[in-house]
Length: 292
Image (cartoon, rainbow, N blue to C red; front, side, top):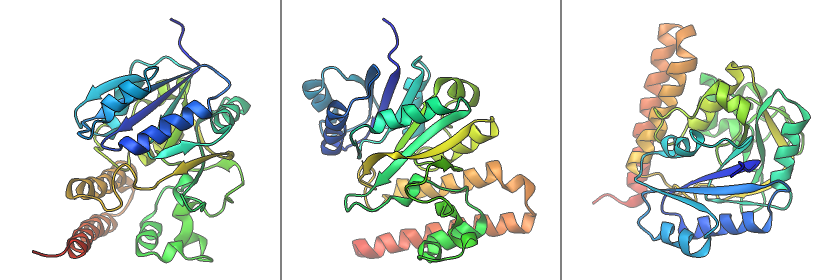
């Protein structure tokens, strides 16, 4: 059988209703090119894989244990031969012409290896993670303390949110969000699959960094819109394993790309800051849940 022009890969874990809406949106807003959808169910216990089989028989279903976001996506990336591959989160809904907008942007420049679209939250606001710059120690500190998210904050503090590019302004960015990442086959072959050293979180930022290092552009295209229920598939408040994975991913990303060129004292400060942030996050979560 000939390969479709676009393969959509959705990794889902315990997000049955969100996944149902996501798959319905793909049915209602298909691209103008042949498409196949593959769902990798990563250890769901809520009946998600049975729902996919019963309600979406045309979707390819892979049943797996909870092996992590990168590893689950790589199951498909390793064997797909489609010219375009889209990694799509189950807590998204594509709007009309969104997929064609991403494909069209890839067609305008053979040097573009990855495209992300305009992501909006359920209240219609921009999900600022749709376009990002690679974090510096200062911008990361500003972002997580909230200072970098204040309107009018200087570029050195708000840099992580790529504020130099407007919401409706197309252009290259350091990184797009893992909720929607459409990649070109040639770029994938040269850059490689997702790093399975990340169990969850930060693997999208890592992938974008490696695309740039391999000579491929990452592009933000606002002509297409995707609804993103942030935290819908992983939970509004991260569980212990997710919290640890998030901070471990921060450390792995910094150690891989930035630490080698920085002074030892700065590296120590960054790692200490990541540990301190993890401790604070765990304490806040515990307080919200209520101590026994």
